[in-house]
Length: 462
Ligand SMILES: *Cc1c(COP(=O)(O)O)cnc(C)c1O
Image (cartoon, rainbow, N blue to C red; front, side, top):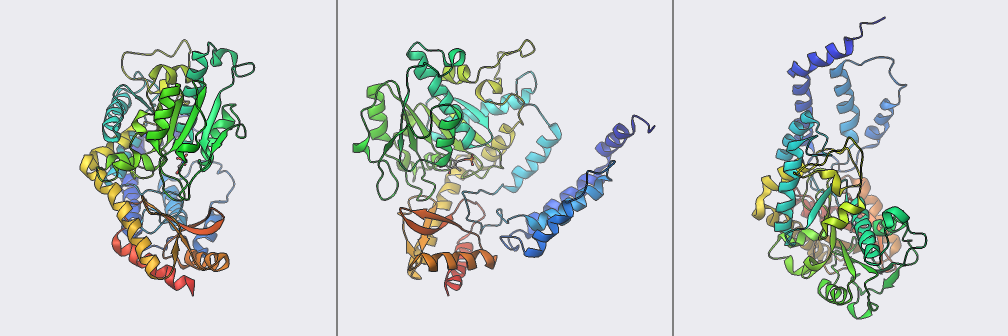
């Protein structure tokens, strides 16, 4: 029989042995220093190297430094260089190096952010972030924020709060009695709503296909005059930042109609809500502050580390009621208990990294960040047009949709672009046309990165 305390002894020894942490630090610093020169998508050899992880479950403990070396040797080369400035797929931010440092400290804390009682510091930092976010985004005091994994979850929480409140006003308790036999809720949604909104509708029993779709214009914006008559049993989904074009719905018209009818408005602002943080771009979201709930990602435009979505809601009671959770051992306190606003109970203290990001940037840094992404997108659009590419959208924010003469050439160009390792863009289709989708979302993208990217586009077209 091995000594029962062997593992503990090893771990206590690790806690005071700085060599392991110095090794991790050296590896991470090597990665951060090299990432801008790395191929944006990994080489075939690096991908093949991932097979090195295919081993049977180890019979016993691994020497810690060997574990770290394997992770770095096999893992680091097989990352996409999404922090390197020339990754334009999905809508992907890059962590700020000072925030990586803060995250290391918070990782050592390993806090459970469920309750104030389980982590006073997490509770405090969430409360501070909530206040800062309302200020930065121009949302009314009294709104609450729930810190979740991403906008998919944030939208589901906003929808759950809306569902609870709209039915409560009809005298129906959805928590107790469910949806069978409940008064119907109408859902009004732009024809260009994000897929995650439909996922939330399916998850929460409102159904993907029973929505009333509002036609959109050439940029994907809801046509305000085509919004059906609303009432107090209606939930309207609006969008700040179309995932293809970056376009914004007409919030003033939507919120005017909703307010007159008593409808609930939720804004999916995964990346676009951050326009509110810039005096120069704020006009894009005018009126959205009159909505009832919002979802937004800090890990996109704000460049916070991953796993940082936020749901904001004007009706704290509705959010808390929808996320209800009880148990004799759960003791809510006077201070903020984060689990009241989220589906999860045990959670990482993700408010810590959000706090570190906002503290690092401040108000002016946040505005500069958001404006910089949009400037780079406009630069890319102008240069690509000059080089004879077609840009299909009005570049109002950080998204650029690019096409060649026809579908075949567009796809062939994209394939060679991805293979080049110079940059990475994904494919999409916009109103029937196949496009290369370029999303500028990293603080690390410089004007030179855009020049180099456009040069790669031109080379790939041949
Ligand atoms: C990214 C995105 C989502 C989903 O957010 P996740 O953080 O990936 O869950 C929803 N809506 C829009 C408009 C997005 O861009």
